[in-house]
Image (cartoon, rainbow, N blue to C red):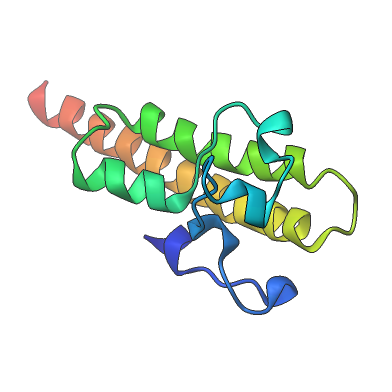
Length: 117
């Protein structure tokens, strides 16, 4: 949710990670996208998968977010590219959230282990 709500001043206060780039839209948005990216991923796809309960593990969910970020960094490879900078900001936020979630789950498990012994 936090990633969906993010807006990036460097790209006009928008969130480009919500945009679906598929075979239909690519010619208009990023004509060479599929020459560079083999497995597209974006927050819209991720949100749909969450709503349809298609993730069975946190690793699957985090993996799709990681893939989306990797794709953005790969496609926008040149330093200083505004979309690359936005992807780097998103990566920092995602890494922080991921760390917090894993830490919270670990602590919860430790507390359950203590109370069951």
